[in-house]
Image (cartoon, rainbow, N blue to C red; front, side, top):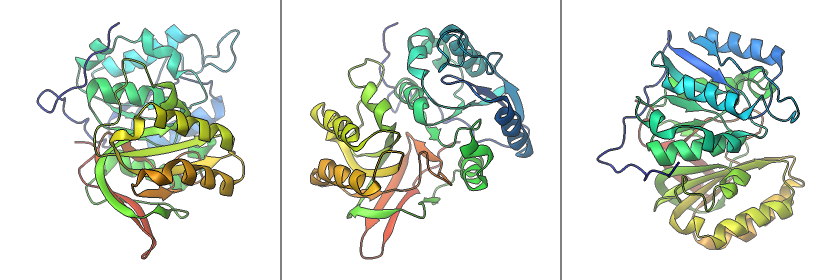
Length: 321
């Protein structure tokens, strides 16, 4: 179906309401298959937050021939769509990444989803594909955080608390930074957050339903399992397509299983350092231990100060209503 234009400030929908105890939330699997034992643990944790958890009917499926997918494309798309359209559901949690979200985009009736009140939406990694379309079509913030049906969530209390706080208490003034965060290039910037998983950001270039970063935006980029030369390729391609033209600052996340971290840092310094904008190294979001939950589509202030050692994002406005 044809892409709709990004909403203007006059017709943009309200922010999704922040979560509170008693809310009903849906867990769906838009990408890879999930382990049943982790699903049970995830439901227990979300229930302990006071949430009523509903599982998509196909959340435990596995594709009959493509075992990297959590069931058939049409079923995964239907679970996501039904969860979004259900007026009793306050939030849609994506179970895990892997691969598969891109295959759903053309199967979803985005106009129907845009016609209902917006939901809280959270997930990361491969779910970047859905974050980008939701952000462009609906103009609402989303949350890039730990995937609830993974060991990175169920076995990591720090990541759990980061996600819980972003969903329940996303108030202005909240400072986001991790233990390995440090300034890579000095400066201060304020703007709307964009990005997510680097390889998925690259996959969206040239498609009609994902907008380029708005002027003055703050790019958040991370990846996993990509060798330094591929990271070089991804960033070089984004540069050539003009993706960084509107970017005022960059916060880099984790680069787990991407080879020697010093080499990755050298690649990103080489490819981004001449943009003349502040850059943070290893802010603490992505596939790392104790991962932060970071907002996409909302205003933050980025501080990268080598003198004080400050490397952080601060929420300027509430992420959720």
